[in-house]
Amino acid sequence: MSHGALLPAFEACFDAAPTHVSRAPGRVNLIGEHTDYNGLPVFPMALQREVRIALRPRSDGMVVLRNTNPRFSPVEFEIGPAIPPGPPGTWGNYARAPANELARRYAIWRGFDGVVSSDLPDASGLSSSSALVNAVGLALAHINQVPVDVRAFAALMADAEQYVGTRGGGMDQAISLGARDRCAAKITFDPVRLRHVNVPDDWCVVIADTGVRAEKSGAARNTYNLRRKECEEAFRIVSGHVATARITDKLLTRWPDLVAAIDADTLVAIGEEVLDAKLLRRFRHVVREADRVETAIDRMYAADTTGFGALMDASHASLRSDFLVSSAELDELVAIAREGGAAGARLTGAGFGGCIVALADRWTVGSVLETLVAEYYECRNITDRIDDRLFVAVPSRGASYDPLR
Ligand code: GLA
Image 1: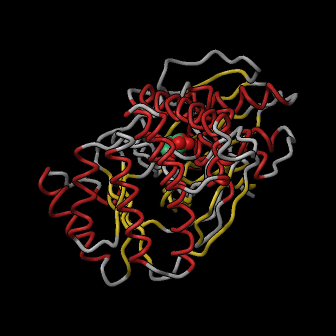
Image 2: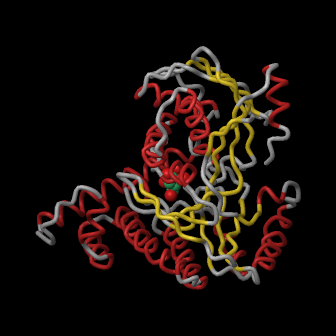
Image 3: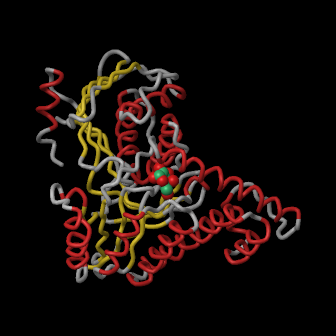
C-alpha cells in the first residue's frame, strides 16, 4: 500500500497535513497454533499487508481516528488508565486497548488525529486487529516518549489487547513488531524472544481465505477463551500428577517446564492415564504441536519442503480432531491446496473460519493457486477481490513509526 491515498484522506478529514505514519503488518502463522497462550513457541512470519495510520500529534489527550474503509465509523476517546470500551467487537476497542494499557504504566497525555487504512482482510486470522493495536500503540509511545524496546513492547501490547476480552497469547503482537524481511521467527515467551530464520527463496507461502469471518472479539471469543481454560486445567492435572508420582523432581510451574522435562510420547502417555477424553485431546494437541514447531524449524533450515509440509498437515489434523477449531470450509481449502500440489496445508490463526496457509514452491505454486480458484472460489461464485482472498505471502519487516517529511 502506498502513502498515496492516505495523505489526501487525512487532509480531507483534518484540514492539515499529517506528520508521521505508524504502520504494523499482519502475520501468517506457519506452525505452532494455540501454543502461545500456554507459553510455548510459535513460528509465524509478518506479511506484506499492513495497517497504516497517517497522523498528526495533538496538544491534548484525545485520540481522533477515521478509517478509509467506510464500514468502520469514526472513533474518538481520551487517553487514560480506564477508558470505557465501545460496543463489543467494534474496531475502536483495538485502538483504545494500547492507549489504556500505556496510560496504566506511563504518564502519557498526548493523543493524535489519525486516518487508518489497511489492506489486510479483517477477521480472517491474519491479525489485522493486533496490527491496529501495534500501530496505535507505537504512535502513542513515540508521541509520548515512551521507550520502545521491541521485546518488552510486544509483551506490553499483548497485555493491552486483553482489553477486548479475548485472552489471546503474544504471538501476533510480537511478530508484527519484531519481524525481519525474508524471515520467519521462532517466538518464545516470558520473556518474549525472536529467533529469525530465513525462508528459503523458492518456498511460496500461499494464503487462502475461506470467506467465513472469525471475529476474535465476536462469536469465536468464547470458544477461544474456553480452549485456554481447558489447557490450563490439563496442565494443572498433569503437572500435579507428575509431581505426586515423582516422575521428575524439576519444578513444573509452566507448560514450557513440562515439555522441557518430559518427552512428548511420555507426556501423552501420562495424559492418557490422568485426563478425561476431552482434556486429553486438548493436551495432546498442545504437546505434539510444541514438538512440531521445533522439528519444523529444523526442516526450514534444511530447506526441506516436503518435511515442513508434512508437519503442517499433521498440525491441521490435530487442530481439527483434537483441538476442534477447524470448520468445513477450512478443511475443504486444505484438501484442495494439497490436491493442487501443496507440500502441506493447515488452518492459520485461531481457526473457526478465516484463512489457511499452504506451502508450495516456485514450481508448484501456479497449480496450487489455480486449483484453489477453480475448486473453491469459482464453485462459490466468488470472483470479486480474489487477490485479497488468495495470495502469496512475502515475509516482511515489522512495524515502524516514521516522519513524513
Ligand atoms: C489468535 C491469537 C494468538 C494465538 C492464535 C492461535 O490469533 O491472537 O495469540 O493464540 O489465535 O494460535
